[in-house]
Length: 223
Ligand SMILES: C[S@@+](CC[C@H](N)C(=O)[O-])C[C@H]1O[C@@H](n2cnc3c(N)ncnc32)[C@H](O)[C@@H]1O
Image (cartoon, rainbow, N blue to C red):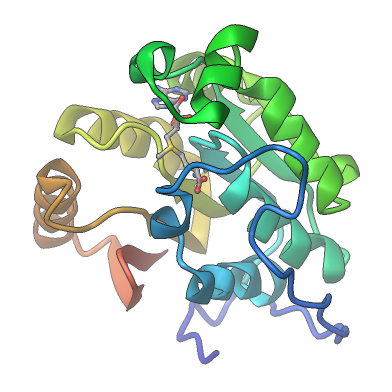
């Protein structure tokens, strides 16, 4: 992957062998939701490459982890390169539809009253439980309690309404270092709020430079 980034940041040079491809994304005992594959299609493993080879040094923060799919990609990349662990911010609450869903996974989550046990099982399955720090609270509380560490990679994938994306960006982008990367997930017709916020933000500032689009992910660098 070729990344045009701020020259002041260093790139990791450590090489590594990639882990064997998982036969499915959820090689674990819990059933998966039919929609899981559409959230982050397999090509989103590029994601892992950003965590592995992306510029800068500092924290990797994910807003919105749900069952840990993207968390696993990020952690696999960062861990393979011997870089920073992943901070995974989510309140880990079941979604409202789950209580009445017929999907066995949804039912199990609703019964547990939390997505956290499933998240933990998934990061364990991928061998990255030592490389992920879940923060079990809302994005705002987590940002207010953040220790001020610079962030080199921020993944915004919480709620996708306009105000939520705007809030997550406003809360967390100040911690992103110059040249650091922000990924916005679900820039797509299903989520007009993400499109609206992203387009507004990019047209109202020259503080961010779009690097590339990967499926529904917009990847920018802070100028
Ligand atoms: C689209 S899902 C994340 C999917 C996950 N990144 C993946 O790729 O599998 C959104 C998640 O964001 C969480 N979320 C939404 N708004 C949040 C907020 N303000 N604070 C913390 N978590 C939030 C929800 O609980 C949900 O688990």
